[in-house]
Length: 219
Image (cartoon, rainbow, N blue to C red; front, side):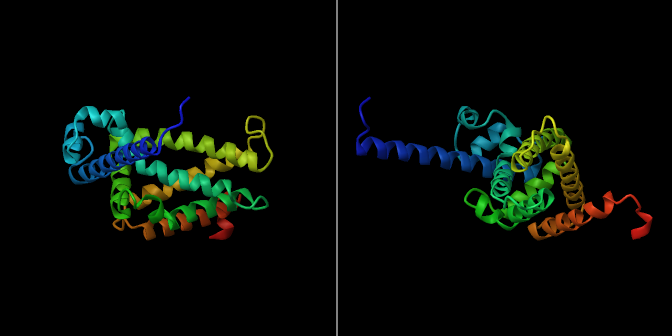
């Protein structure tokens, strides 16, 4: 195989950057339109037109509106998974989960602002939580992430997730707390990162007491 010349390498790099810019622009345009006029009311043609590309170009990057809707959320989840995979080996599993999600919220600007403003992502997240057409997809993705996290926790602890139920039980409880916090946040009137971070922290604080058999004793 003939090695690429410097000029060919430069052209390849230029094409890759152009494709990335187009993809990023489609994500931002889609989220702006979804949050302004509603997910179901927005068409692929409108998203493509906002970026001055064809519908065919849109489908080169995303298979449908649902995929572009969750593109930024996938980045946030990837940051959480990366943080979790690098937590200290001697850290308790629940502590590792909690620390990782807090770190992901703290670092959200660095994770996504090259593509969309944090404020737009938060509005989009609220839109997802309140759009019936997206709730099922959100829950399906949440279940997929839950399984991935459970297997990661199992590897950290030297366990087989298919033989030992503890990783799935723990992550299921953790994910339930995250869903409850997200729902409470979406139904409030403060859609900032600070708000959802503090709500998440508060809900996570209740995992221990809630698992206590005697709730009446801690009233």
